[in-house]
Length: 51
Image 1 (cartoon, one colour):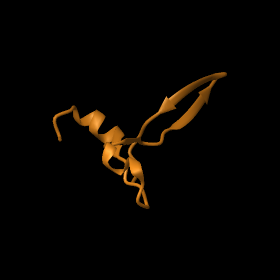
Image 2 (tube, helix red, strand yellow):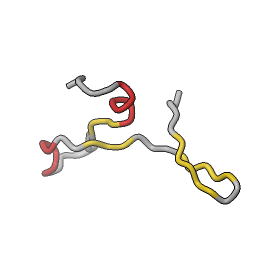
Image 3 (cartoon, one colour):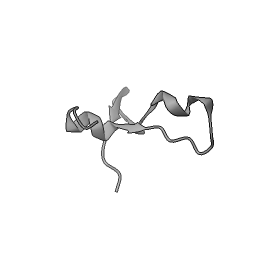
């Protein structure tokens, strides 16, 4: 609906199944994939736009 903050709208996407499913009308969200960065034995999740 466009009411949330821009940074959240960019991370969440409406789930569009490739075939007809019973969950089609449940307005499910899919989370944008992110990559895991390791530095000195610690893990950090990183989010960046993909071009």
